[in-house]
Image 1: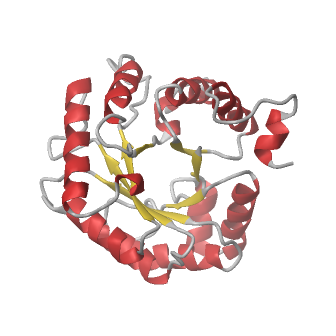
Image 2: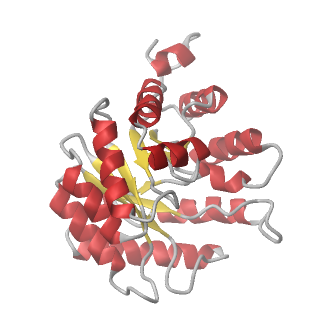
Length: 272
């Protein structure tokens, strides 16, 4: 599974303070620990931690790269912030641009802009595209799949390999009123999205969104992740420092016959 580590995000108090203090040690420690825990990519999100998001994105990217060679996932729905990060990012090992909707009321061509940036970043650059359009986040299966189909079609028209495309069906917090039906809607949508192209696009989720505001956050995250893997999920933005969650990843992949079973399969997955 392609694991995108979530912790270098200005929404977290320690990262927000590190950005304010320009404290490289906090950021670099998170980068190293998440890499050692098995991250495929490190998500880099300024969040609301700084007024100048472009400069802060560049500082974060440069700070991480001084100590860690793990590929980055530049996270912003503002193309200018992504572009700023790309100016200083090392893309040789790959990079992901996270994330773009199909379109927005204020920017009908935003998906095109992300595809253009990814193409300029090189053949290993991917995009996370949300099943969301100018009307907002869909609440039903059919609209999610229809938007995903438009994303896949647009990418094909622009010569963007579907294997560089990550479709995010957008998890909603299960605690929100009337949202408890959404997890099964997302799984049903994933069953159809994986049939939109051959080879299929990747599917990813921001896992922690499902448990926002809930008391049993880690348990909810773990169970939904295992369920989603059985429906074709092959990527997720997760807390790789959560050892029990990482054990669920390893076990799910083994049970889906993506990893060879042995009595020490957990250690084998971690490379220890």
